[in-house]
Length: 94
Image 1 (tube, one colour):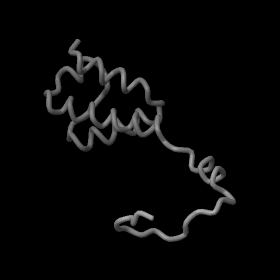
Image 2 (cartoon, rainbow, N blue to C red):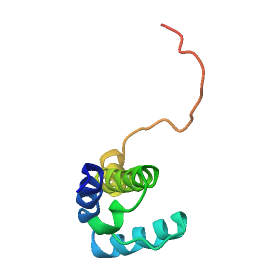
Image 3 (cartoon, one colour):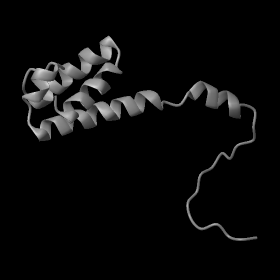
């Protein structure tokens, strides 16, 4: 089995069943070909398509594993005196 195919299979296994179905449907539509995540089917795809699939899965996993907890961040800064304006430019030394 191709190393890239093995990597894609490994990344695909990190997704839950719902996510697997969604990514398979979206990638099938994008690539305009029915796509199943089996070693045989992936091995028949070209290097450019495998690279595309790998990048999509990598992005999904990265996002899934690094989503900040907004509620926790809100609670951490609740009641603190935070700036209410944002401005851009140089800061003057005092």
